[in-house]
Length: 145
Image (tube, rainbow, N blue to C red; front, side, top):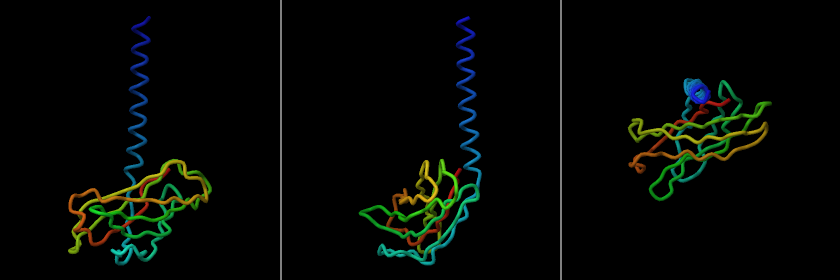
C-alpha cells in the first residue's frame, strides 16, 4: 500500500512538472514582434513612443528610453494592461544592437497579475559584458496570458 502511495505521488509530481513545462513552452513559442523606436537616445530622453500589444494579452508599451548606469545599459519605460482581464504573466523584450546594427544580445522584464488599467514600470537590462557597445535597440511585447 505504501509503495502504491509513493508511485502515485511521483506520478502526480511528474504530471505537474510536465504541465508546467507545457504551459511555459506554449508561452515561449509565441513570436515577439519587435519595433525600432527610431533612434534610441543615449542621454535618457525618451525616444519615439512605440505602442505594441501582444496577441494573447492586452499589454501596451506606452513609452521607453535607453539608460546607462555605471557599466550597465537598460531600456526603461511603462506598459499598461489595456484589456478587460488580468494579465497573469506579461513581458517586455528588448534586442540590443551595436553601431553597425549587429545584434549583441537580449533583455527582458516581466510582470505577474497586472489588472485592467494598471500601469507597470519596466526595466530590461542588457546582460552582455560589452555594454558600452550598445548603440540602439528594438522593443516588443513578449508572451502574456
